[in-house]
Length: 288
Image (cartoon, rainbow, N blue to C red):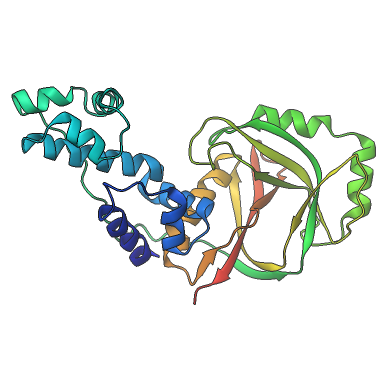
């Protein structure tokens, strides 16, 4: 995965003056668009789109220092107008492009290189499971995207589930894990920024296809899952394991993520306040 990421960085470098889409970059990487951008975000700490913008403006700064005209540089890096380039450059650097030419002001944003860093010896337990095709069925709602802490809109969604809906979910549930699961999908920002909304479903796994209009259904094809059990303070431990899966486990594993929903379940500990056992299920495929 690290070699793959560095190859993508080189691919971007060679096309900084081209109009390349994020989807094209993901296709080059051979990873579904949403998952590639999520992997990039967890490893680099920034969205892929922001990285490309920063690299373009950094190279533009160099060109201005070398005496190129603002107009030429603006169009070279894909801006439709000088005003648009000037606003973006000022927001990024804190000064105007013309000031670079006149005074030699400069800001840089170096090309990324992904390397393996050996840390502290914290192990991650996981298991691999194969599952046939199934459906998530449950109650869903558009909720604000929130990376940390308890999402109160999800709490309200859970509290809104009626006895009738619970009874139908219970009657449909026929697959492990026999737990109430949480599934998030259709994020406005592909889960890369803590803004906008996503669809969150609370429900169960079933192979049944007949579902009443009281519940929503999300089909999932047969695939392999990497399952990560974790235990600790809730929800921080669950959120931390999600980040570690993408930033530590995935780059060094024999698996890659496929385009299917990720889900989790949580069992609160009755004897410890805000303490829980959780499992995160990630859809994967063995690397070629």
